[in-house]
Length: 308
Image: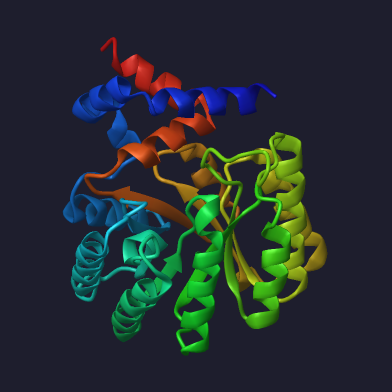
């Protein structure tokens, strides 16, 4: 109950315009750089090279969400394509997260499909993987329609995300695994502020759904990317992997840049494949506030920055 109230309170405060303006001015002085690789691509690539030297892999995430105009979506798509052009010449495991509204889903599915085809084709040409990220609940139907359209068009260099706090997510997982027997799915708890009409308000229900989802994914042949810093969830995943003899190639732990570094190293040292989600860009505020809302320890890190 405390975690749910803390999260709702902090997300509410983050929407307060004077607070947002202050943080956008002062954020990097207060410690935003702990969770955001930087505001430009060079900073993000430097971070991923460092991670790979430590035997981690990276997910490049250009920040920016809820793009609501065709011009904005086309501009964001052009930036994603430019990033892929740059990745072609980088000796990295090439993996990028893209939000559907960046491609135009906030305008129309047709626009998003048009831009997504360009992005997936370019990514396939350079050997890159694209994760179609999940935004807030009103975009779930469109995101899954976008995934289905790209998959049926023959793009195999594609995965997507389901959020265990949504009531619908188990049903969505069943539909996706029926569509694509080799599905790769990133399972998260969910970080947006959602209504109890669509999302479990209690952490124990979110966690129970998460456990049910990863078990279903593994039992039906999917590859599951376990995106959680929750020790209880991680322990249950490891127990399941050991008892059910899941092929390690079907499992990846995906953790957030700057969050619980000791956990990242522990999972790596236990022999797991660990991929770190590396966000960058000027539009960092929404992502950053969701990270603060997830763990009081993250907020305390920033508060300490006020008194340095």
